[in-house]
Amino acid sequence: MFKPTAIKPPVAQTSRLCLLLILLIAHILLSAQQPDTLKTAHKVKYHLEGASIVAEKPTQAIGNIETRTWASDEIITELNLADAVDEISGLNISRGGKGGSDLSIRGFAKEDVTVMIDGRPLGGGYFDAVDLSAIPAAEIKEIQVIKGPVSALYGSNTMGGVVNIITRKPQNDAWLKAALQLQRNNTRRLQLSSAHSFNTWDYLVSLSDYYTAGFPLSEDFQPQGKENGGIRDNSAQKQNDLQTRLNWDFGDFHKLGISASYTWMDFREIPLSIHPPYTYQKFVDWKRYQMSANGIFQFDWNQKLNLNLYYDGYDDIYHTYQDPEYSLIALNSRLLSNNIGFIARYDLEHENYDLIAGYRGERQAYDRKDNGGYTEWTGNWQLLQNPFLQLESRLAGLTVTAGCGISFFHQHQRNNWIYHLEPSLGFFYEDCRFAQYNLAFSNNVNYPSLHELFSSSSGNENLKEESAWKYEISTRQPFNNGSIALSMFYNQIDNMVEKAYVSPYNEIFVNIDQVQSYGLEATLNWKFLLEHTLEYRYLDYTTGSDRPLNENPQNIVTISEKANLPWKINLEYTANWQDISVSESHTISAHWLHNAYLSRSFKNYNLKLGLENIFDVNYEEKYGYPQPGFDFILSIEVKK
Image 1 (cartoon, rainbow, N blue to C red):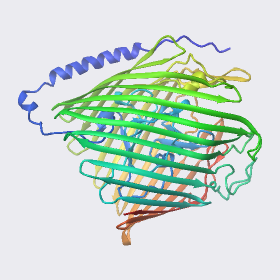
Image 2: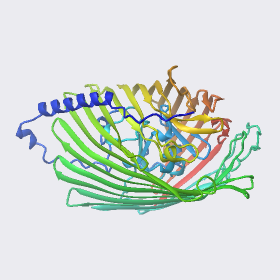
Image 3: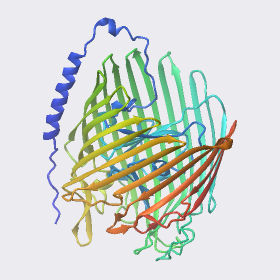
Image 4: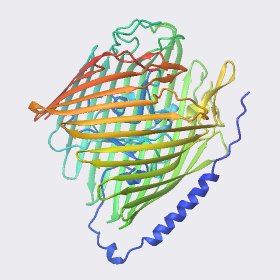
């Protein structure tokens, strides 16, 4: 019988390292003092880039940052964020089941990854996992991904990495924009927006409507179980999204911003596995709403304060049925969850160092009721707090970034707070040839989700936090018309949360012993006639790990070619190969996917035509869930 272990915060190793970091910070502060003449030499410098409360330059992030950027006149044909991040090296998306999309970074599950929009963390709700397939990929400028060590600036629950979506800022060249995208089987997305920038303020209002009657399967798909092929059963969806933002400058150097969004689905059918047992399920009403306020206050040429207050809420009604006609309800469940948080960050810039101090606090709560294990409204909550300090010192081409956060965790069933030290240290060097070298390590934690703690069927209120020591060494070497980038990483994860049988018919969340993963990522960029990109990722676990490699191919290769054709037409072609992987103890076959896009920009409108899964490959990303076959994309964007 499973017996919960006593809660004992793992602080011995991290305490020693934090002491060393504090001594290092004190040494640098004392040795970096400059004469008063230098202190006054830069009083005309004001650093007000961006509106986020995260790294404003790569060295602040500790680990290597990978980005995907869209030009201002480029049409975003990805329907949601799951599609948008799928092409970033080191990330893996598997689609299927109630969760929609499962994001994995270097083997870490989506519950371990923090997703942000403009530096504000998105609440994962009861399951503490953001479904990227439910967030539209509209008005995106850039996606930043930290896959390795994460600095103290990003707070707790970053054990698996960070995905930060940077939105586009309104321009003053247009007032209205309409975008229409069409795909097979009556799949369509319509977006109407108004955005404009003035001297001291800007605004955005955007409304989108998405509908699909279901996605087509490959013609090579063989009918199995309840699935006959053609259009994937139970894959229809209707979703609407409203986004608003307002930003303005005041007092010459200060900024204020507010944003709000509301997403609702009238229905979202959930495709079932093609293998038994069969569970017919659907969201009949799903809502997500968020509000945030942000302020940047410049006190002096080298001092500023960044404040952010945010609220995330979910409200969904989920049904399971006994029949494929959705007529006999087996489970009728309603779940309400919300996150309320506050972030404060103070920046002090010096000639040779930057000092950053701050605090993050968040309250997570839920209420649920159904006709099963929650016949009455049942709710719980937990609190997370995280003060942090980070110092960046620049010494003749070498940048050293040292930081430490202290995270506190409490939920109302416990009488005591749990705390964990999260140190981080990074070395960044750039030589005269612009070659870059980066060495970083950190300890990052992930606290149990509300579901893992309080689920009536499998919750365990005595779970300990997961923690990972993460190490990364990377380099980028430029050469004539190109560059080569290489990263090698190693992760040691303790107390990973997994389900385990405590009796033949009862599973419960438990902390397993240890998992060790390692791998490398390499990227070649070269411009000769065309723009060539070749990416390779390798990921593996040590034989002594207590968890196998799951739904993560060991090898992934991506080839991308870009060309400027006559008549100002842009061509982009990508080919992606994924090695065999394991899902639910079953082998998922290796496969190639090929996509091609043609785009053309005119004065007031943009046009894009795409072909996806060109060779109509029949493949799976998760056992029992076949993925879309061949599809076309026609997208038109008009600005006025």
